[in-house]
Every structure is written in C-alpha cells, then in structure tokens.
Image: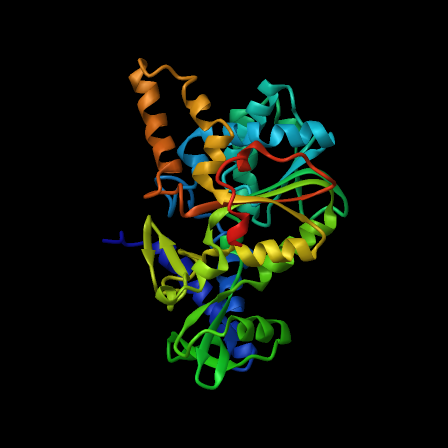
Length: 381
C-alpha cells in the first residue's frame, strides 16, 4: 500500500503536471516520451531530481548500494586505486546522489595513500549538490577541500570516471513495433490526463536502431540514445584512464528477449515499483534498465577499449569486498551483522548481485582490472 503524499507534495506534483501539459501544448499536442521523462526528472526546481524531496535511503523512494553500506565505496576504492596510480589522475563522479559514495571512496583512497588531487562531481541538481556538500563536510571534513563540483564535462580528463546508477536515469525513447514497422511512442493530453500516441519515427538514428532490432509486432521497449551520447562525450573528454559504470541491465539479447515484450520502464516511489509512468509527476522516479551492448558499442565507436563487463557480485568480490567485511570481527555481532546483511544484498543473485552489472571502458593502455579477473562476460555483449 503506497503512503499518501502530503498536501505540499501533491501541490508540487500538480505544478509539475501543469508544466508537462504546457510542454505538450506548445509542441502542438504531442511530445516523445523521452522529452516527457527529461522534463519530469530534470526541470529546474520542478523535476524529480531537481527539487527538494528525499530520494535516497530508507525514508526515500529507493536505496542505492552506497546508502546500504560503506563497504561498497571502500571496495570500489580498491578497484580504481591502481588506475589512479597508473595515470596520476583524478576521479570524476557523475550524478553523485547524496554524496555517500564520494565520502566513502575518498576515505578509503586516503587510507590507501592514493588520494587524487581532485574529486570532481558533475551534478545537474542544485538540491543534490547541496546535500553532497553537507555529506562531505560531515563525513570527510579533512578531505572536503579536494571535492569540486562541475557544471559540464571537462574538455580533457585523466583518471577514473565513475557512474553508479546514472545510465538508468537518462531519458529513453519508447518504441512500439507494429505491422507497419517501428513507431516512436509519445505523450498527448486526454482531458486532464496523459495518454500514449504512436507516430512514425523521424529521427534516422532511432529509426536505424529500431529497424536493426527487428522485433515482432506488439513489442514495446526502450532505446537509450542519451546513454550513447553520454558515453561518446565521456570518450571524447577522457585522455587516459577508465570509465566505470554500475547499473541494472542486460546485454541486448536479454534486454530484447521475447518475454520482456513490454519493456523495462518503471516508476519508483517509496520503495514500490509501478508500471504507470504518469503516476504523480515530480514525486516519482522514472527509470529503465540499461542495454549494456549498446553502451559497449557506443564506447568502442568513441575510441574506447572494452576493459570488462561482469555482474556486480563478481566485480565486488574480485575487488576485495569479503576482505573489507572481515575487517569487522564477526564476534562483534552488533557491528558485523548489519554489514554482512548489506554485503549479502550486494552480491546475492536474488538481490543486486546478478541484476546489476559493471562495465569498464578504458583509453591509453590501462592495465587489466582485478574486478574483471573472474567472471568477465564481454563475450555476451
């Protein structure tokens, strides 16, 4: 049972809805779903990620791995430390959420003696940027001076670019394959409500991707051109180093499986997953799984090398998650058990261990990562 939003929250959703209605009317009565999703999530002051509601953790709408346990960030620090030593570079985190991952990463890199000169965060939300600054000041005050917030990607970057649950929040194109060929699904007004309407695909890039998939009539799914564009931009700015993306998703053969004929688009609100993307705009997160085959292809096209692809469980275990856990003695049950439970969620096939994947894209001849040493699935892409 979903909790009822407060009066203030409902009023905010009504403002977001009015903004979306105006966008549709200004566009002549139809916008592609990607435009709807972008506006619902990122419109300054209104969108889900751009307004002040609590999003992460037990009191929010979902829990990310860094919120579950500091062992996630510490283990990632061990995974990327060799790249930082090899390149003498910095860290750039995309969409840093509450700042929890940045704090844990910096703390462990400090203990390892591999602190980067700068830890950059690219964050489009002013609200989240403020939360990240508060987290750093509270958790790592002695290291907070190394953190810099960016408004755009740098022209040149050396080191590690990190994105945890970033790709799934990018606006996706919805495509409906019909007897007459693929069509792009858009949003129209139906009285006071939003409704679907399909149109022919005008974008030649989207049309080529949809045609190449050759899915049967009635199939509805997502194509994430924004993820392709982001990976291309990252490849352009990275001079030497590693791009590491962690997210839930599949290779293309799994993503467009016959049993997944209704796609992966979901709404997350108060730890519930819903199928209605028009539910309370501005109060709910919109997300789609990641097609990692497309991410890999975009990376290679941008001049990057596919450094590895595996499950989150394999990557974290290869990178020393168990050793991080064992730093807390099991005899100290009050401290050990919550961490052990969190680790179980991170690696269990029934939880995040199998659904979440890690992909590495590199440039400049970076040494192989221990995280991909066992269980590498590049062949599946």
